[in-house]
Length: 263
Image (tube, rainbow, N blue to C red):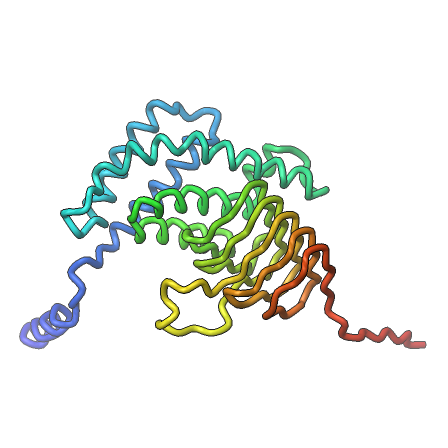
């Protein structure tokens, strides 16, 4: 039995070819994400105390994630810290957009505490700023943590403007090269995706651009890097779009629905 056990251990160790796969990085990133959210929004959290804790946790993430030692990973914290007030300002504008857009929102506190769409946007904005510094794995782990909690999948590399509103959140997908401008509203089940998946498309714009003041209703699918949804347009539910839409347009699904009364 001991010999067989030793053989199994040796086989597992032989197959563990990736020396940088440390699951602790995922766990500590989730802890760091929660710390960030509390620091920015929780009234009872002491900002100064949490900033120190965030810095310590960030250093731990750097040890786990910055595998190329020549890269200046340790210089990132101060730059990231300086960006936090501006990120918070943007998020407060997002929360105001929720209040203006959703008649079911009873208070601004409810938006911050209970809306998965707002949480998804918050973690996107916090991870997007980190991604700018060339540290890709931690931002992706942050947004995947949010994805698991909210059902909203936003790649941290997407570019999203001010006053963004996501209603209900579940099933939304926003791809890596998507561009969303200001005052955009998106409902559940919307996909901003690529026309097809191919490794050759890496570093190529393959997801749509959504201009200012666009509303996209539930389960609409918009695909392609050259697809642009013009400003002030409304995209109806269950639509399938693979080419650009002019500004001030209304796009609807024209499937006929028949209602018959049974006597």
